[in-house]
Image (cartoon, rainbow, N blue to C red; front, side, top):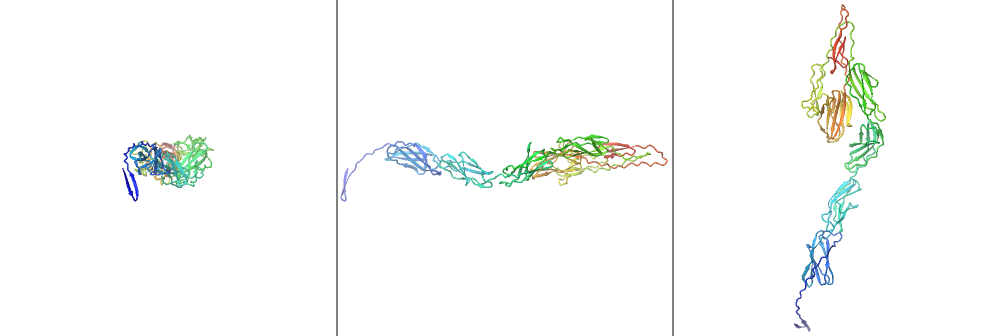
Amino acid sequence: MSKKLKTYGILFSFVIALIPSISFAAPATPVIEKIVSTSAAGSLVNEASVELSGTKPVGRISYTVTATPKLPNDKITVLPSDSATSWNIPVTGLTAGVQYLFVVTAAFISDPANSSSSEFKDFTPQSVPDAPTGSIAEAGQESVKLVWSPPANIRGSALTGFTITDGAKTYTAASTDTTTTILNLTQRTKYTFTITADNAIGSSSVATFNEVSVTGKPSAPGKPTIVLDGSNLKVTWTAPTDAGLGTVGFYRVTATPTSGTPLTKDITGATTATFTSIPSNTWTATVIANNGFYYSDASTASDPLTTLASQTIDFAEIGAQSYPGSLTVSATATSGLTVTFSASGNCTLSNLRTVTFTSGGSCTVTASQAGNTTYNPATSVERTFAISGGGGGGGFGGGGGGGGDAPPSPPPTPIAVPSFSPDQKVPTPVETPTPVSSSKPVPTPAPSASSSAGNSKPKTSSYFQLTDTGAKPSVKVKITSNNQTIVAKKSKTIQITLPNIPKGVTFKSTVKTPDGKTFTLKSTKTKKAGDITIPTVSFKKAGTYKILVTYGKVTKTITIKISEEPKKATPVKKPTAPTPTPSAKKSKATVLSIVCTNGKTTKTVKGTAPTCPSGFNRK
């Protein structure tokens, strides 16, 4: 059909043709051959990007990509040139670390409704990783230990490591590390460290560690000095000039011999230490300090000092003897050196070890050891014993006659026997009944009914008495070794001190008497560190006692050997001889007989005017 139109003098001629519709087949099914990350360096989690690509047939074809989860703009369409042999679709604004399922749809431009779609293909976009978590810093000796947890999400790209900085220096750690220690830091300096996680895209945001102050060991104590104090070695030193971050209050002192085993002593709150009863050797001493965190280096060694070893004498008690007579004494020294003796009183010494009695009374034998180039002199040990017999007062000449017996001795003073209070802390004196006859010994109180053999806790004891620790003692003893021995007279009171006992330590004292019985005192817990004094002890019977003091796992034993005081003879009134009458003839002298006792032994003395020997009273 044709039609002509005339407009403003111009003639137009139109031809309209009807063309039947043509239907084309859909494009070949696209294939997503490649997906690559195109995220820029340092891209954050929501800035990830990828590019999809595939082969394109000849023709005018559009390509549209969609994904699950949805893309920021739902879909993206590209139109390659007709002659292009491939298609490329860039996708931006993706969330890194999230897996996407991509689909590409191809359609002819002339027939967009007739399309074909690819299979799904997954890909995880990439960005910098998340920051590390759980960042903790712990101060050390001129160092800081850092601990962290890896990122919760590496955002599609494997970790390559960690970067740590204190603002001045930068440190690195491997991708598998979760801790590192920074060394060679400055003491008493505060540090704040930060950390990032790294991957191929870049570094995460910063995680900050807590602020820490670096600690440090104290400087070494001053060079110690050592001197001899009897048989003891005394070490003194000065405190470190730099205590580090803490406070120095503890020292470890080591005394080292030229040969043999070193000796070590821990000291709290002081700058002196004493090593007791040290063996003969040449010694040096060193000291290290502790500030509550770390030990210092050892001090410079002291100048050497040569010492002599200590020694003690073992000299057994001597029982009562009779005049006339003699005995041979013997004793040993722990050094193995020869012990010498001397004698005083009613006796003499001959042939080095033979003691001969000169009369009744008492004798004191002293054992001594003077030492040599290896050993110090030993403490002398005295043994005093009674000698019976040999007494006697003058008789009467001519004429007979008998004398009356000497007046009886007065009753002895009642003995004060301690009665322990229920807590066994404060002993209360209790008087025993006065004997009816002075010739009978004062009875020994029996243990309470609740006592048991071997480990009894009696209410009273006739062997010893505890007194207030505030009482002034005759002898003071400080327990400095596991076994010590002292010698004292019966009249002496002894105070025992435990040095350097820590706070909160429970200790107990046990007294073993010469008859083998054991008395255990109540346990006590120290309220503060320092020297601890147990109650003063006075002994009422001669013999060998042992006091055991236990604290923690330590037991120290002190052996106390108590000797009798020399007894003074009680004057006895001489019997009066009868006055003869003028008419009386001289007759033979009358022999009299009296009985004497010293409380243990009874003797009969005969004579014209008999008297009891020294140490005995007339019965």
